[in-house]
Image 1 (tube, rainbow, N blue to C red):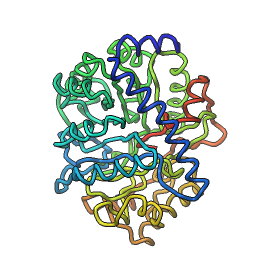
Image 2: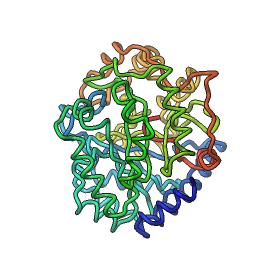
Image 3: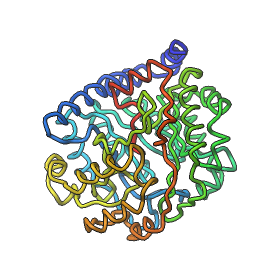
Length: 397
């Protein structure tokens, strides 16, 4: 399977795009984790990488999304974004996840990617704004991978995304990417209504036929203005997803990414481990994208290094989350999060001013921490990658 996967990358990917993927992401990914581990040992805390929401603007209003498109429009300034990247580079970080809203609505997206050819950018997008011209520019730059969110097939995509003809629009953007020989990913937030469609060998083979390079599975989190808690997965469904991921990695010639388990099948939370934090479009530094509280802001509180060193709110939240669970504290114990935020007098950084009330009404849900049910990786390649690089750890852990 590794040979088939390698042949797909060699024959379906532009040479410059492939080089940037291997060097900027692969080699520097291992260097980044090495430097992060060395900092942790010396007491100099700074995350291995950041995910950054460029704007809260979006053309869709998906169920369970934490981004409020009804809130006043905000976007991180080009100067602030460059300052963040420069500071991260000084710490050895060259990988950035760029989120929204819809990041392709950020007017200077291409300028940022072009300015930092030594970095690597993963664009979390719904794909509806990716034209042949956009994909061709991504190919020319080389240091970017579009990760297109597909939340179900034709009918389910429209329901989940509260839109019309969303699946075909996303697939059109995907086709533009693969036609331009980009390393293109497809992601999905798995819930009760799409698990049968998307967690299947048939779906994976369909992606391979469409020249998709990797697929990334998340676990649905009922947050935001329209949380739909009835869509949350049961423990049995989460275990089904985990087992499918492990088997798909040795069965299909496609990279399968998750953000939840280490090589031995133990649950992980990258934010609790200090691997990653989130910066929203207003500059607030959050634990992770769905936990929308902050006490520090990159536009107000000095250098990112100093903020990370002195932000006791985030430091204590990492300790609290790690002591409570190996999994997701938001799903397992929203009441504990609510109490912590109240005691800390933390800022509601959701931009809609209602996240505390949303958290208070949130029920406990199963997550990926299911002791005694660990499913170990069968692939040595994935075990190696999860140990020595940040592959497998993502924005939504």
